[in-house]
Image 1 (tube, rainbow, N blue to C red):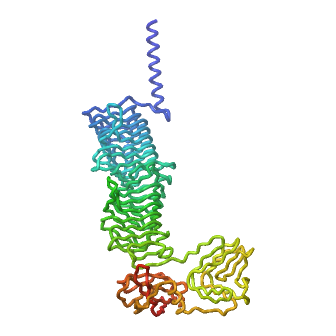
Image 2 (cartoon, rainbow, N blue to C red; image 1 turned 60 degrees about the vertical axis):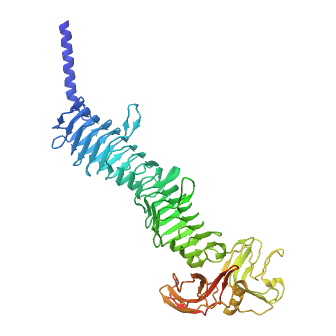
Image 3 (cartoon, rainbow, N blue to C red; image 1 turned 180 degrees about the vertical axis):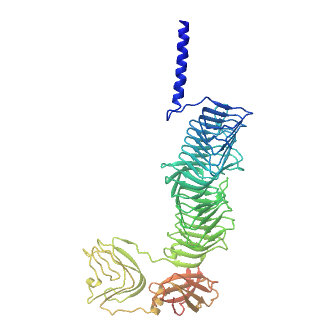
Length: 636
C-alpha cells in the first residue's frame, strides 16, 4: 500500500513537469522564473533574454555586448551602490521600479514601467536615442523612517524621451537635474527641488498631454524651456518659469499670482494669465505676433519686460515695490518696447526704476494715470483714452508724442507741457433724448437776427430721434416763423438753435459747418473772420510776436515744418488741414526749444495747408499769438 502511494506521487510530479514544459510553447502564456538577485560583489552579464518574477541588483548588471536584448520582470529594484547598464536592451517592468543606484541607458535602450517609478537616491543617465516610459507615477522622493515622503538625493540627466502617464514629482537636492530630451506627462507636475545651485531644468519640449487641465507647481529655480499643452487651460501655483509657450494657453492659479524668474520668457502665442504677474529677476518677452493678456497687475522688480507684440494689462503696469513698512521704493527693472508694438493698460502706469533700460518706441493705450517718478523718456506714443487722467513726470522726463482722446482741458499735466508733440482727438458728440452738441463754425440766424457764431452750439432737440447733425446744412425758408427753422417736432417740443433739419425716426450724423438763414442773406466766414471768432473764445495777445514758418518740405506721406524760433514763449501750436479754412484741422504742440516738426501718416499726393502760432502760460491759462501766414505743401 505504501509502495502504491509513492508511485502515485511520482506520477503526479511527472505530469506536472510535462504540463509546465508544454505551457512554455503555448502562445501568450508566460512562465516567470524565480527571483533573480545580483549580489553586491557580483557582475552579471546574461547571455540570453531574461524573464523573472523580480530582479534585484545589489552589484552590477551589465547588458553590454551580450545576446540579451530583452528583460521582462514583475518588479525591478536597484539598491544603493549598485549599477545597471542597458545597451540596446528593452527592459519591461510589469509592476513597480525602484532606483537607488546608478542606472544607464544607451544605444536605443528602453525602460518600460507599467506601474510607478520610484527613485529615492542614485542617478539616471540616458542617451538621446533611449527612452523611459512610465505608465504610472514618476516620483523623485524618499520615504523616511516615519513613512513620510521627503527630499531625495537622486540625480537625473536625460537626453532622450521621458514619458509619464500620471503624475510627475521631483523633490530632490541632487547635483544634476536636467532633461534635455522631450518630456510628455499626462498628470500633474510638482517640481520641489530645494537647491538654488542645481536647479531642475527641462530643456526639451515639455508636453502636457491631457485634454483636461493639468497643474504645474514649480519651485523658485525650476524652469521649462518650451511648453506645449493639449488643453488650453493650465493650472499653476506661484512660480511659472517658462522660456517659451508654444500653445495658446490660459494660466489659472488659486492665488491669482504668477512669479517669473526665467532668464528669458518668450511668448509668441496667445497667452493669458488669470491673475497678477510679478517678474522678479527674469525677463518676460512678448514676441512679434504674440499676445499676452494679464487679468490683473503686471509688476517688474529686478527683472525686465520686453514687448514686440501685444501686451494687455487689465490692472496696473508698475515698476516699483513696497518695502516691509509699506513704503514705496524703487526697483531695478527694465522696460523695452519696439516699433509697432502695442501696450494696453486699463489702470495706471508707474515708472519708478533705476534700471538703465527704458526704451519705448511703440504705442501705449492708457486708461488710468501716467506716473513717471524717475524722469524717463517715452520715445513712442502714449494715448490717453479717459477724461480726468493725470500725467505726472519728474524733471528731465517727457513723452515724445501724446495723444488725448478728448480736449486737452479734460486732463491734468504736471508739468505742462510734458511732451514733444500733442494731438487732440476728434470732438465728442454726446447725445441723449435727441440733444446734440455741435462744435464748429456755425452761421446761426434765428428769426432773422443774423448772428454769426464760431464755437460750440447747442443743436436740435427732437422727440423719438437721437440725431447728431454736424454736417454742412443749409436751411433757407422764406419767412420768420419757427417753421423756417427746420422744425419737424411734435407738440412744439423741438428746439433748433442751429436751424438744422430735424428728421423723425432717423439717426443721421454729418460733420461740417451749419448755415441756417431766415429772411437774411447767407454770410460767408473768411479765414480772418474765423480768427476773430477764435479770439472771442481764446485769449489772443497781439503783443506776442507771430512765429514765422521758414519752410515746409514734402516727403512720402509726410512733411517737415521748420520754424523761426520765437523768444519768451512756452511753446508752439501747429495746425494742418486739407482745407485752407482749417475747418477740420489737426493740432500738434511743440516745446519752446523745438524748431522743426515732422507730420507722418498723411494721404499721398494730397495738398495740406499749415499754420503756426506761439503761446504763453499764464495764471488764467494759455495766451496765444495770432496765426502765421498759411503755407501750402503737397506730400508725395
